[in-house]
Amino acid sequence: MADIEGVKETKNYYPEVPASHEGFHLKGAHQLDWGMRNRLSKIFRPSTGRTVMLAVDHGYFLGPTTGLERIDLTIVPLLAYADALMCTRGILRSSIPSTFPNGVVMRSSGGPSTLKELSNELLAVDIDDALRMNVSAMAVQVYIGGEFETQSVRNMTTLVDMGLRYGVPTMGVTAVGKELTRDARYLGLATRICAELGAQVVKTYYCAEGFERVTAGCPVPIVMAGGKKLPELEALTMAHNAVTQGAAGVDMGRNIFQSEAPAAMIQAVGKVVHELMPPAQAFDLYQTMKREQELAAARA
Ligand code: R5P
Image (cartoon, rainbow, N blue to C red; front, side, top):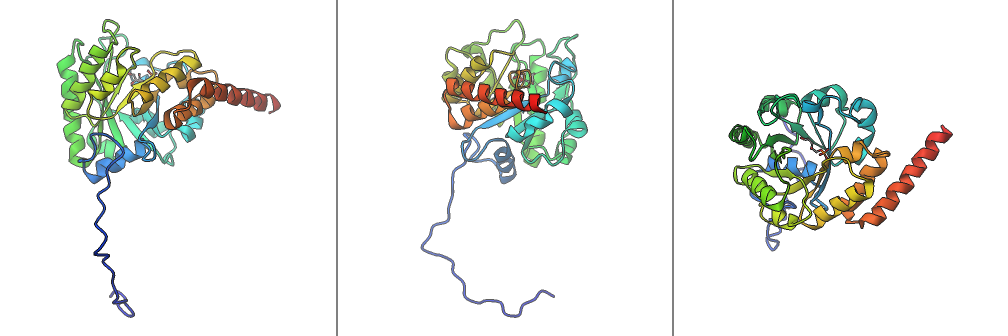
């Protein structure tokens, strides 16, 4: 029996204080259920509404691409600086410490390798396993304009339905094939389709002209994919442009793990994303941290 001795009778219901109904730090998410918003809060920092998501899922169609040959050696040391990690379940189970406290966005589609038609993907994860792995979101590639466009959209809507059943958000990843132009018109079309059909987050590429129209036209948060490796200052400038033009952060891979100093680079990206540090200043910081790292390595 519960101890009922000495229970205090005096109560205060604060009748003069209205119950709070605080907003939420992400657009389009204020009417989602608690579990989904809690998961989104593990990806997007409540204090800034933005994320530095580290994308290392490339192996699902590329194999051991440069920088990802040994995830345990090159990526695990970067986790301390990532708000969220995007990876496959194979890498999550085999190589990522289960003590990682931040968001995990699980790549949930797959099938073809670079040797085949990439848009011919299917879902590659069951919701049961996503829940078992306690992921914060599931990610699916959407090939608007691609050969298997409808199939990839169907993959996304299936994932959205499964996710809604259990409070797991879906991130629609707009894929661009070699033949598709990465302009605001195309990216606006692809991101809007993902949001209209239920994705709670959309990942897309940056475009120099009209990116603010892409983010404004998408009713849910957009995270910017990094794309091919650029010189560090250019990558930091692109990240700065994206967040000041409405992106809710970045989901960057090669521009971090293929950098000469990945730990310095991800920290510089963090300064840009969360503090809107000007790119030149973030680049100085990158160079300072890189030098310190080199000196420490020379002393060891
Ligand atoms: C590509 O399909 C993968 O999903 C990557 O997560 C995505 O391209 C982001 O990585 P990166 O910044 O290297 O483009």
